[in-house]
Length: 157
Image 1 (cartoon, one colour):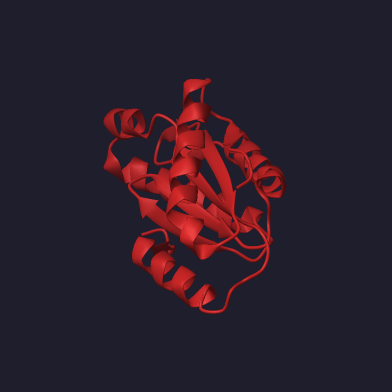
Image 2 (tube, helix red, strand yellow):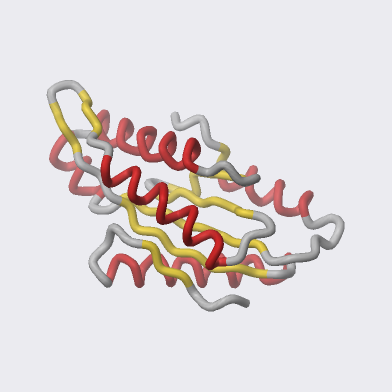
């Protein structure tokens, strides 16, 4: 639907990426569409699908860096930014967060305003990846708890 790869692709890509030890710091960026269930409930799943595509397109177009961008599940999107710290990734994420906020989606007769919450964490070694995803997820929930429509990062690993 979105043209994005899925979680299985991400896992295979990471395994291939780390066949040789990659020096440097890498980041995981988790994005969640704010109040997505309410959008589906109010407008229907057709509009919900359009919202996911809309957000995915904005993010994909907004990231100029080398990346792997996947639909992680439901309305969650994940980006792997190699050779970027959490702080460097924050600037990238904040730019596309603002772009999502500023663009109203027109679907049929509906005008839908969308925002996203984002969590970021970084890692240096492949064996830290699972923990990094957990930390990015924790940062995502922190962004939601602090009012949504924002980016939160965890400390560098």
